[in-house]
Length: 115
Length: 114
View 1: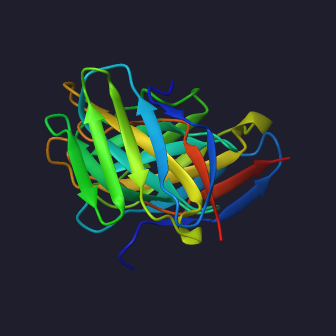
View 2: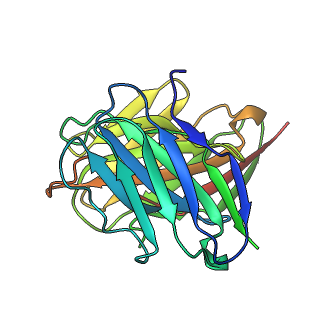
View 3: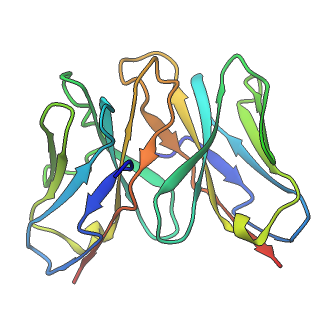
């Protein structure tokens, strides 16, 4: 697979449960991004990983949200004690990074529904 | 918060017509990018224009950038029903260490009627 892969594609869970979302970036892409997209809205930046640098976590909405990435491979976004307002599509993207003049390549997202 | 603001929020046209979408932003940028999103899918990169460029073409797409007005426009010529999608502008801010980090607008929903 040449593209960004996300799993699961859909997740329905009860309020208060923890969820883990996975992103497989394009091989060789050093940068990885997580976004949240609420229904009918634009993308809200969550977190950005670039190589071995400290991640930019400035977009995480609360301490219930965390993300990890090992090297330049898979990343997981974890939401603890989910709330109904967490319902959204969570999109992952990856890119090469050369002074920022690179497009991002997106997965199809995980649609998260909190009951 | 979203830096980009897109106008119009929704656009409905007939096949063969041109579609123009506008984007405004607030801070100095390194580049501006346009993406397309079909319903239920991820975003697909369309075109990137650097801050020192004023116009760029790709197939039926034409993008302009006016850094003095902090605005950009995307023109789709001879539209097709398959162009129906949401279109987003995104800016990469100048400076800082988070190279490649993008700020997205709210998007324009384009509907092209056959």
